[in-house]
Image 1 (cartoon, rainbow, N blue to C red):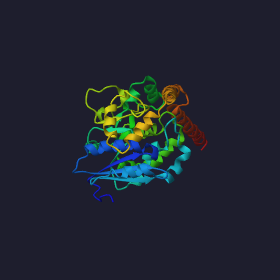
Image 2: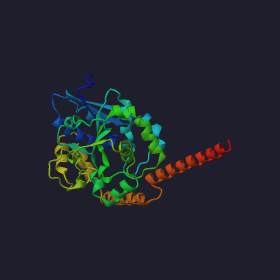
Image 3: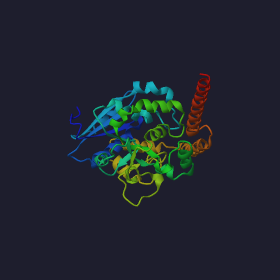
Image 4: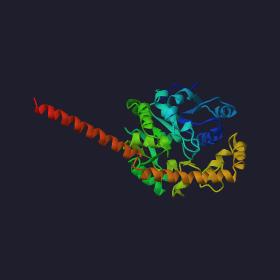
Length: 334
């Protein structure tokens, strides 16, 4: 049972299927290593489908002050299946976080982390940062700022300053604010209004939270794609295809393997790495090129999200002008 003192708890959410649980195990091992023994950590794992041996191993990682609970969101996923647009290796798990505000009314604030992360500091340190009345706390996406096509996509297709476009794999959620603005319905409305093919969930979150984000230091979402940082990372995020369980020489891989060796999943992870073939690596490379091409195509498209939105607004404005004009003609005859 979770402790009922929610005010003192640090709620941390992950989303994972059975096959990705070994990497969640590494993430949790790093969380445990830096956890404050005087704090209580509520770990919630959102998933769907039947749980197997990996889930049992994850549950066994719980300690006196670190509680771990799994939640099946299958039925909730069914409600938005028609609106889910997943590309390449993405699965429906990327949308699980949108259920958090309504599913967990006991929390006014929570942390969400992707499973391909490793902590180098106490997650309570991030949780305790005051994000004030902002909807979210996040870090500007280093993968976006370092690639021209992604910068043009965020600016020209989404209408968002590339330097303000955040990565949604490490975020603080202001759940109270989200519930007040009916976040779930807003998210689904945007998702159904346009087929986002570059980063579906992340794009929607950026649109909803635009100008209502507290930005953290990059140390809290350090990515291999961002290059070596001058300061020690507080959290490493092996974003996109840069996975140490696939490739040798990934920047910051030492953090991952340090904790992987301490988990019951170490051998399974080594087996996954051994099974990663040159054909899979080629698929990763082609996927990366395709993503950049998609981003550039959307940036240049006259039918991208921001252009479509602008066209609809202009059409509605013209409709109102025409209506007002008709009323004006009638008034002249009275």
